[in-house]
Image 1: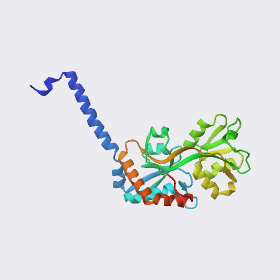
Image 2 (image 1 turned 180 degrees about the vertical axis):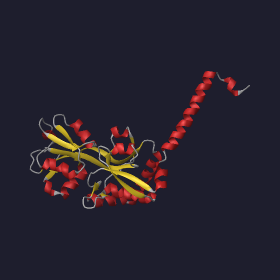
Image 3 (image 1 turned 120 degrees about the vertical axis):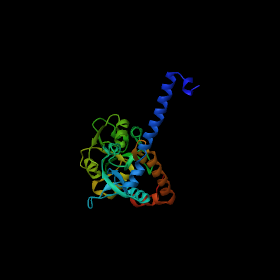
Image 4 (image 1 turned 180 degrees about the horizontal axis):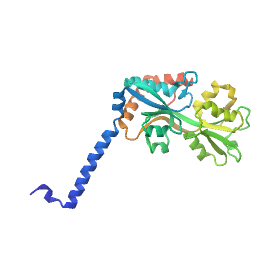
Length: 272
């Protein structure tokens, strides 16, 4: 008896559909996991950047990207034996840049939020960060409750996870988003009295304001909130690239290189 005669036509159709699904999925997975091959064959690792000094920022004197995350990307490109290609982006557009294959990695200091996890893959965290409020030195504000009142204005970066958190956390104050990715422009909004506070990444902004006392600003005083991982983003299904980066990250951490670069840019000991 022929093997197929054992099955009804309906069962054969089901089996055939299942086989086509498996074959199609395998072909899709093979095509989707091609980022590493492409990077190696072209000899280029394209990384998108948005400004969050000192994680990553463009030096106005040279026009080149620098910072902790950028130095880490330089090391990754060296380990892969390819050239690092910097691609300008913003926190508002960086996820779309990754999805549109304008870059292989979204390398800015991205928070690993659920909203982003729905559309991209994350690497293991490079570090951890919190969010907090910064006010003028002579400001009377000391607590989040002082700021969370009608008529108070807090600014935050458009497209930032810090801003999304502020919208959920503050019930009465106005959260005003600014399109600029230039930290100096954001700080000037508060320094010049156009906003009461700046809600932003705590560690990086504390460092930036210490180095720029002309803004006359300080942390609010309350404990920073919303501790999250600082990660890089890659497109969905790029599991091979994700694995390569994560293996390399563990090597950076175990060798002390991550701590070395953190000390260079933040002036403090690296804490996981």
